[in-house]
Image (cartoon, rainbow, N blue to C red; front, side, top):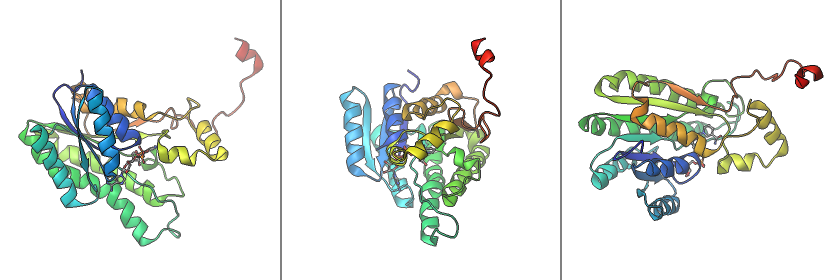
Length: 265
Ligand SMILES: NC(=O)c1ccc[n+]([C@@H]2O[C@H](COP(=O)([O-])OP(=O)(O)OC[C@H]3O[C@@H](n4cnc5c(N)ncnc54)[C@H](O)[C@@H]3O)[C@@H](O)[C@H]2O)c1
């Protein structure tokens, strides 16, 4: 098992990518603190992990709040004695251009998406160093790599997560704490499924991915497990793109349709 005896916190663990990752981490032998702002969700996910024979403890957290994040790290130490992996995955999106967004929207999204990563590192790094090292994983987005419109604070926040990832690795790599980010393409989680109820949005997203489909939360969890494990021991400061080939193609997709004779081989 890839995470045997490791202690991990997964934020946003009540749904989507975080829930799939908490389940997979536990299957790989980790003791998992399932953390989310929705208490009933963490209770349910942790209970179902335990029913399946894994080890999990629920924790209600607001990742934008310093005292709450500090208490979450302390909960991991109090419950399991150490902390090896912190998956800063909770995130939020508020649509809008710079003109449309309120100042409160800006601060809210930056708090949940960026301050959370700073706070997670602030409180987890000393505990990880005391235990001999660790792995921090941050969920960014392909929106952090491009100037996609319509959600400017989301795009800005995810770009900040990517560079914060690099800065954290520079500061703490020598102490054995690796920090990496994951940039997912469009993944079928509850908020995305609601957006994809619009057939035009769905088709646009299917066309954008070279694989011609959307991703599954489990496919991001697989990358997270690898980054959490010692299998990625020389990977540090990277933003790993897991996007079904979204970035492989230009917005044009194909320049020309394949000729019928080429299709016949
Ligand atoms: N689904 C996608 O296509 C996609 C693509 C790129 C990046 N992401 C990122 O993946 C991460 C997970 O998103 P998801 O798609 O699984 O969504 P989701 O809504 O299924 O899960 C997000 C979870 O975060 C929790 N959360 C929100 N604010 C919180 C807070 N302040 N404190 C603690 N928990 C909080 C929510 O309660 C929710 O359970 C986010 O950072 C998101 O930006 C998602």
